[in-house]
Image 1 (cartoon, rainbow, N blue to C red):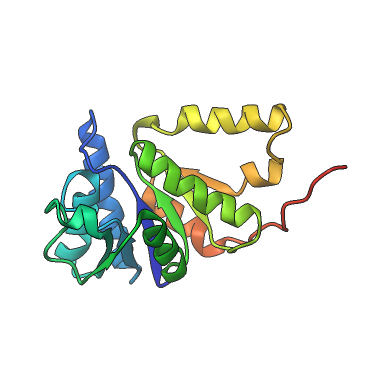
Image 2 (tube, rainbow, N blue to C red):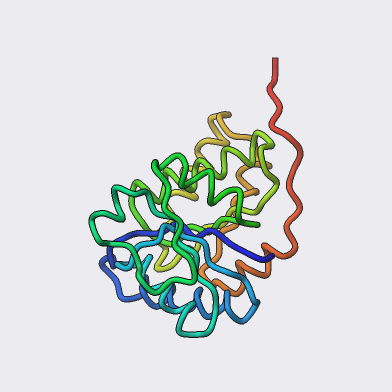
Length: 189
């Protein structure tokens, strides 16, 4: 693993645990010589994970749509800041550059980015690991919903198992290193 995309919130969240988890993930990435690729913001959980990577001597690459960069929320001290025109270009560029995807706590944008990466994995557009850092049990309701999707036969069990969920970023990265993608999505007739 050379680079990992991290999707996360541009706000701090209600618990200090979210910022602590972002700091720890940054340290863990640097310890493993893995570069961070993320949305490029200087604020919230996004800014914290980037600052942690940079403060610990790692590489942090931001990918920011021009309209957000013009709002002056981009991180000015990154290893590299790539400006794109649209959110779609941002996600495509991130997917092209990385070896895996992690979601830290965040809102609708975080979910949308993570679900697109997961969907692309299910249909075979990539074979990269997708994980949720379940800080403060933030993603537990989503994990329960994945079980509901399987029970209601809208998700195959092997694709539920594709989503790696850990409370510890080091353990999540360990699982990423051992990841083997399941076969392509199939349909019952």
